[in-house]
Structures are given as C-alpha cells and as structure tokens.
Length: 264
Ligand SMILES: [Zn+2]
Image (cartoon, rainbow, N blue to C red; front, side, top):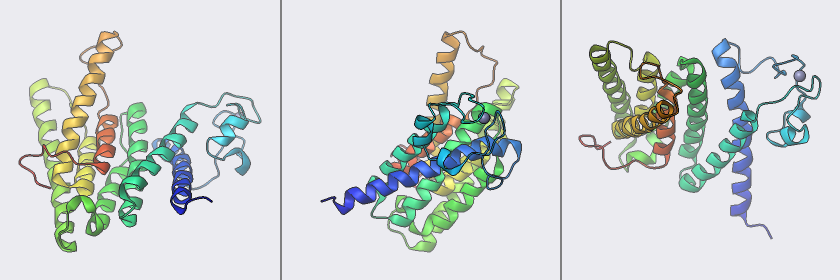
C-alpha cells in the first residue's frame, strides 16, 4: 500500500520535472525575445518540431540517448540536468513547506525563475525584466501567506514584502554606485538591482541582506577559483546573478539570523 504522503511527494517531483522543462524553454527563448509559449519546441540544430513523446522530461533524453531523432545532433546534458534539478528542488520545497501549500507554489515558481535567471545571466550577462520584475510582483502577491514573515496580519506581511523590495533595491543600488566610484567600472548591473528587489519582496529585507552576503561569498569563491586556474584576470566581468539566485533559492527555505539591522 502506497502512503498518500509518498504519492504526494511523487506528484510534486513530477511537477518539478515539468516546470524544469519549461525553465529550459525560458533559458533558451527569453534572451532571443521569443515567446516561451508558442510555437512548439524545435531542435536547435535542424529546426524539426519536437513531438510530445520526445519531450518527456529526462526520460526522452535517456531514450533518445542524447541525440535528436531527426538530425542525430547531440542534445546538451544541461536540459535533463535542469529538469532533474527542478524535480529535486520541488520535492525539497514541498518537504519544507507542505503546511503552507500556497507559499509552496510561490516558492516553486520563484525557484524556477531564479534558475532561469542564473543560466541566462551566466551566458548573456543580462537578467530579463520579465523574470526579475515578475518576481517582485509574485513576492507582493504571495506576501499575505508568506510564512517567512512570521504570524503578522496580512497587511503587515504585505508591508514587510514592500519594504523588503525597496530595501533590496536600495542596498544593491548603493553598492553598485560605490563600486563604480571606487573601481571605475560596473560592479553590478541594473539587472542585479532589480533581482535583489525581487528577493526582498519574496523574503523581506532580511532575506535581501542574507542573499547579498551569501551571493557575494559564493561569487568571490568562484572568481578566486577562476583566477587560480588562469581563466580570468581581475578585470574580467563575472556575472553576479547566478550567485544571488543560488543564495535566494537557499533563502526560500531558511533565513539566516545575521540580518542586523533588519528583522524582516
Ligand atoms: Zn535535430
């Protein structure tokens, strides 16, 4: 006899896989300013439309042995990795927030958007507004049932989210401005500023502050790693979005307490 709990977990995992598949479409199409909804997915090499049975997350990749059915061109491991990653993330978010189903849905959608932001910023150094500003909107809309904001009444939670968005925007804008004054080059772009505003709206000022700390730490470790391997010099730009996004996904689970002077 399968436990209802196990069944729910399985369903949530499948939901994550499908969302991961859509995340792949966002990563591929948004930088080209193409609609993520229509037309149907095509092979990037031969342009042949991909049939539904060749578009099943992870499974199709395995059955097709990583090659397009029509042109036999290699399919990147990135597609099934993102699908599987979103499946696991979905399950983890469910385990954390199943007592708050509405928030679970918001957190799941934002983790997909943050994953898309990471990959797009990594490849193009740009963060599409539709994702970052969309997340600001999602943060505000889901604020009344956001458990990260404690047990306040709904309008107080909305206020916490609003303040969080403003705080994220201001902290990041200030650092960008200081960075430009000190190093005479762009340290953080407008995309990062809007992204941190989104993180603030989703997780409050404390979340935005956490995210900036953890993201900077991850970005620095990555940058030093690259420098040691001789891949970049100090003046080469490193996208900040992937590290902010990774930190933001962590924040969707837990807010670290080192947020002074921010309580929320
Ligand atoms: Zn093909």
